[in-house]
Structure formats: structure tokens, C-alpha cells
Length: 542
RNA sequence: GCAGCCGUAGCUCAGUUGGAUAGAGCGCCUGACUGUGGAUCAGGAGGCCGGUGGUUCAAGUCCACCCGGCUGUACCA
Image (cartoon, rainbow, N blue to C red; front, side):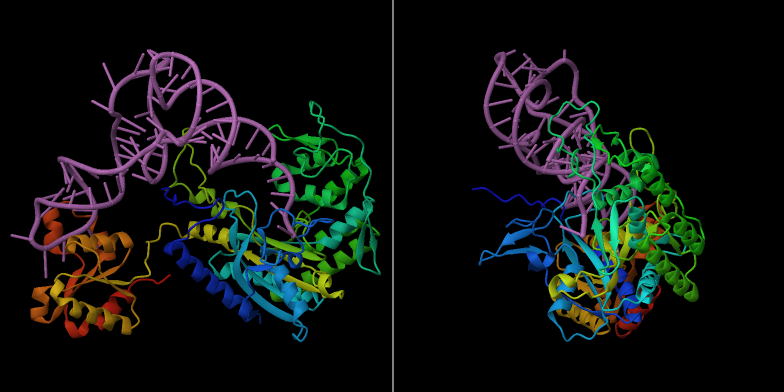
């Protein structure tokens, strides 16, 4: 008979108490910020119909890749949600009597069928807030403020993160300028003009099939708006030189993969480069520079006006350039964004390398390795998406919102707090010295529990040494000890393991260690709760 | 998807040019210590050497395929 092998499906993980406690604390802090801005909670199911998620391939009966999709008992395609925004637009479309603007927040897992990487999982958590039903740019400015406030609320201090804001409209303005798209102001939509592209093949490629490993880019396909966006999005990875190559002749990356270029002309590439590098510290000056690049493009002009308005709102509230900057390189993928977009990243220096000197493993060269969960990328992102609900109702419903990448933020926080004592959800362990007195031990525990103290009775085997070891390994700070002697005197012993651990550093002889019974004291039985509470109060709870 | 690297104990890894019962450190368990964590010491458990097929007198070691993992790249609503 075959036994099942205990193992996890790729990209999924078990999360234990330590991380869960930290996450819960973090979520609470963020929730408080969201609620302070007037957002209410919402919960939607994990599973939706695939067409609600908008994930059918064009002209196809089966869902696109990237999501966990299944056929249900009625042969309908259903799937695990891949974000919290699509379900939100379903809710808004479905419950027509919701008061708008509808403001809600939602925390929960989402699932994506992608290759897992460092800090990337197939099941991960998002914490979103959205305002649906207003075009007011205050909502966008507010979203940036909320992002900042939330990061600071969980302990990322000012200067350790930066909120970067851009506008899809400005980006579109640039693309219009180079002739890739046309803006229909009346319908507020983009007409993708798709530039023709010459045959370009990898210089040393002998393969006849150029569609392999080009991410949907083929040599003879026309260049679309999305291709350029995608390329811009790669700036932080391949650098300006790489972007230039990808926009023109193509690029071979260090692994040897060749990616065909977009074959844009020199003017277009120069315009894009100008655009990507035009940022200056002042937000309003950045707008001035953007205005020069965008020229008479109507979307571009519109986008800049929006940015200026956001700048004004932010300025009024004291969110200056030390926290929020305008950054033309922010593209936010290909998402549904239609206006302002924003993302917050952690400043690597403050959170990464400089903190790694002590406890990290070293590789063969003796150089300190970055830990496997080293935080990269953005921890918060969002933007305006004015036509997501339209899919359901045909009506434009303006919306904007943001999302915190809970897992990434958590791993960053683990860094900042690393080195702190491990703590357990259990505050007191009641040891069992005399099995005939079990009832007494239960009463002790009960008393502590009634007082709101998390208490565990030791239920394993072994003597007192074993029990203390257990408490120690589990990170339980306090132990209550009572045996025959104590019962006779109507006392209990309280042992402070955390304090004891500190004292132990100076003790070498075991006899000495035993004799002193460090950090242990007897109290009368009726002072139990009082005394335990006092000792626990000595610990910082964070 | 594509490319490169790697699979030996719970973890990190040794394992000679193919050669007998498969090794270490850490961790885990039991004890020394009368009713006390840490330290120290002694002992113990734990391996289809990722799988299958081949080459060979002989395979952890060589070859092929498969599976799994890591890294880069692509996709990422």
C-alpha cells in the first residue's frame, strides 16, 4: 500500500504562529488606517465564474492561463480569484442600490498559477481599498496618503519608503506623440494604431520559429501600445540601455535569451528616453518638463493637469517630496488603469544590505548572501480604473484604489524587527509536578484564563526539566510551578524564563545555575493572577 | 514557455580515479544533575544516496530518460 508523502504543492506554503501573529498585527494596523479614511469592510468568495474575472481567451471556450480554473458540476468554468478588484466590480455591478461612492476594504488570499519565485507565491494575500463611483482626484490623492499612512502605521518609517506617482494619461500622451496611439477624447478611449515592424531575427538564431521564448512578441507582428508599455516597465531590470535596445534592435540578456526589438525609429526612442529620464525632485517642475515632452497631445495635457491637481491636494495635507514623488517610469504593468497610478517601494538601503551584517549565512566566496525572502519590488500599488465596471453594466463607473502586498511587506517587517525575542501566543505554562493534583493545576490555569492570560497546561510526558525545556523551546515567557511543597505552604512558584535566559549568560557551573533558581520566586496562592499580570506587564507586547 | 545549475539523514553538506557494513556538524530523543531551561559530558534514533532503465565483476559515483528544486528570462489581469 502506498503511503502519501507529506509535501506541499509548488508555490504554496504553511504559515506558522510567529509569522501569523506578526501578520495579524500588521493587518490590524492597516485596517485602522483604512477605517480612519472611511472605508468599510467587505468579503467576497474565493471562487468566481471565470467570465466575471474576465479571463476567457478571445474566441475560445477555455480560460486563459495564469489562473486556477475548473469545470463545475454544470460544466461551467469557475476559478479562484486572482485579485480583489474584479470581484469588487462584480459586487458594484450586481448590487445596484449600493450608495456611491462605494468605499470598501478587503483582506484575503488570491491565487495565481504562475511560476513562484523569491517572495512570490501562488497563494498570497492582498489588502485592498477602493473608492467606486467618483472621478474626483481627491480619491487618488487620498489613496497615496493612505498608502503612506499604512506603511508608517506598520513601522516603516518615513525615508524608508517612497510613494511614486505617475499618470497613464501622460504615458499615453507620449505614445500618441510618437504616433503609436490616437486618443479619442469624446469616448475617452485609446485607438491602438500598431506600427508595422520589419522582420527582425536574432543575429545568431538558426531557429526558424521566432515565436519561441519571445513572450508573445514575434518578429513580424505589428508593434502595439502594450509592447511599449511592457518595455518601459522593464526599466528597473534592464536599465535605460536595455530599454533602448528593446525599443529598437532587440536585446540579448545575460542568460543568452534573445528578445526581438520593437524597431521604433530614432525620434520615437529619443522621445521615450526623454520622458523616462525627465524627473526632478519637485513635483510641479516634473510636470513642467512632462508638458514639454507631451506637447499638444490631448491625453498628455489632460494627464498633466490631473497630476498638478493631485500635487496640490498632497501639498495641502503635508505629503511632500520626502514621501510622494512624481515618477514617469512607473507603468504598473498592463492593468486596467486609466489615469493616475502609484506604487510605493521600500528604500533598499534602509531595509536591505546594511542590516545584514550579523546573522546571515555566507556563500563560498565569503560574501554575505541576501536572504531568500529579501524584499524586492513594490509593497503597495494602485491607480484609477474608470472602465472596469463597464464590462458588466455598459456604464462608465469611475473608480480608484490601492492594494498592499501583504507578504512582501511582512518579509520586510521581519527584517526591521529581526533580533527581537521570539514570542509565543501562550503567555504562561502551568507545569504538572504531581499527577494527583491535576484538578489544582486546572484551577490555576482557569484562574489565569479568566483574567485574560493565555495559559497552557503541560500535557506531555516527562519531569519538570522536560517541561521547562518545552516552555523554553516554545518561547513561552512564564512558567507556574507547584509541587507538594508549594501546596502545603499554599504557594506557587513563578519562573520568568526570559529573564532567566539573560541571567544564564553569566553562569557556567550547573550547580550554581540550579542553586540560584534564577528569575524564580514563590508567592502565596491567592496572589497568583496579580503577580503573573505584573510580570507579564514588564514585557513589551509588540 | 525557454535556458543554465542542482537532487546523499529533519537542516547544512562531505563522500577519493567507480570498490566492501553510507559520514560529519547542527537539530531531535534518552540519561548524568534528588523538583528546574542554558552550558558540559555520555549514549541513541533517523538514509530505496529523487525515480526508472542501461553500462560494468562492481554504481551514491558513468550514460539516457523522467520527476522534483533553484536561478535567470518571458508572461503576470
